[in-house]
View 1 (spheres, rainbow, N blue to C red):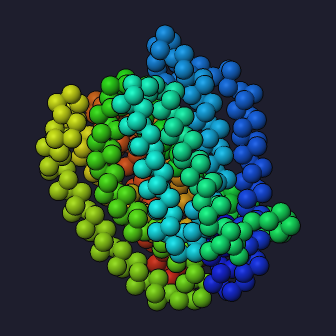
View 2 (view 1 turned 180 degrees about the vertical axis):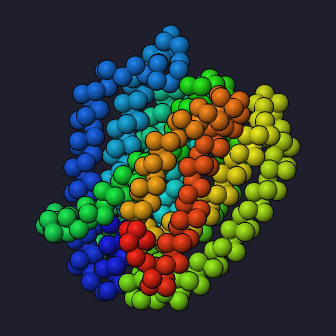
View 3 (view 1 turned 45 degrees about the vertical axis):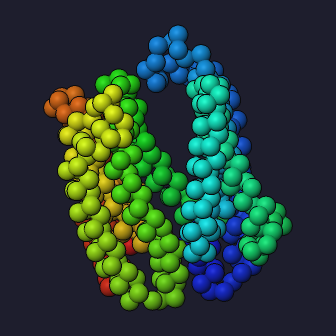
Length: 375
């Protein structure tokens, strides 16, 4: 939707833009119904204690917690589409405000429950899941009835022709996201399965520290996806080339900043979490490497995503997803790198994109892309 919506806006076709929004809401809503139905049928068969490597005596709240998280996550797939509309309209600040409000409300409620000694694992899961669902839902009432009313979804604007158009590209994005999820979101699960829950704490502390740099770069990149779509539709390749060059300079700043963060990481950890949590230098170096590589890939992936040229990314991501677990075991256990080895496995999965995406970008901008480079 983000790509097709941006193209329609660039061409001044407002009705088509609204039809894309409406069709997307219906399609995603259908997927959510299937997701939730499948979960309720299969959830009694899932051994949560074994999956999360937790002793059964402490796993009583896991089934209801998993149900709340899954249902809220599924519904958020629909409600968060409003954020895609904001970004496609090149208003990323509004989408950022929604995230800020979500985090602020969540933090406020958690602080209140902690002070009242009423916070449990189940309660925390309910707060985080429901707030992240309710805030974007409320944004629909605020924005789609005034400043964005021309894009308000409507059942009468659902169009099967647009559904096919969206699905032809959307399923590729969906598979790409699933493959990426298998690579990146599996990190916690792999660490907990191979090294136990204690190491997950160290990993998350280090990850959140280095992720501040990654988040800052992501915020900078956020508006470029739709801007690239708009510029390419209008044939403004010069602006795209200039923007890519400037983003490379910013990436250089990200790399230098991340190296500095690695040098002072031990001191920061002590000030932040105290002596109770120990984060080894190898883990910090691995996460710094991951932050630098992912930032470089993101520059070109944003452009390729905006142009809908994602099939080559999909092939590489699927291959990397299958390689992730064997690599994590090889680096983490066989070579003895521990949790840092799992992060190094993620870095290896990212490496092909460091070379392939810049080549594909250059060929597309020079109008010389052929065969696999047009995918």
